[in-house]
Image 1 (cartoon, rainbow, N blue to C red):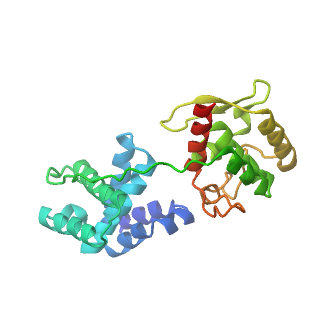
Image 2: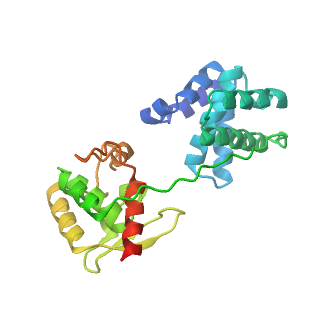
Length: 263
């Protein structure tokens, strides 16, 4: 009884957004006996081994799906059951998600390893990768996007991603103290690869940023939202009148690299 209360208390620490996104975790914790305790140990072990919370999110969802499929703990499955499940994943679609399959294997292997169970039977098969060239937007297309953006916030988002070559996560994490208008530099703190770097700010961006700050009066983060930072959903859905209803930020980053190479 005490153990059950402790598990429920741990689950209540999750935010409503996390509980909504991780529906597999909620179902597995309520439908599979002992899964909540296993999940708690899994999160602890991943953290101790220096893996990121995002690694836990990715692995745990796939482990939960496996538990729901067999209605038992993944640690109690024999190798043949696991192979049958992986085979079923491959047969669900003619073009199964490579990432989903890979994270299922990685997640289960990591779980078995941290639980001190054999995992050598789990091997990731060779997955053929298609070679695709990135979509590159011209400077004219970027300019039309900036012109069509109605809000100053959206103009600045596009300008920072394209003008500074930032990723969505890096833009969301910009704090006022990271802006150095005197030196015309932006300090990107713990960007991709957990590395810091400095990027230059153009005069146009500085004028826009100063205007935005004077109007919005942000306290800590440059772009505020419901959770103190602008939401990832908005970052991934920059609307424009050019028919780009869902614009991946990578397209703008590729355009940045192309512009730099072309001079």
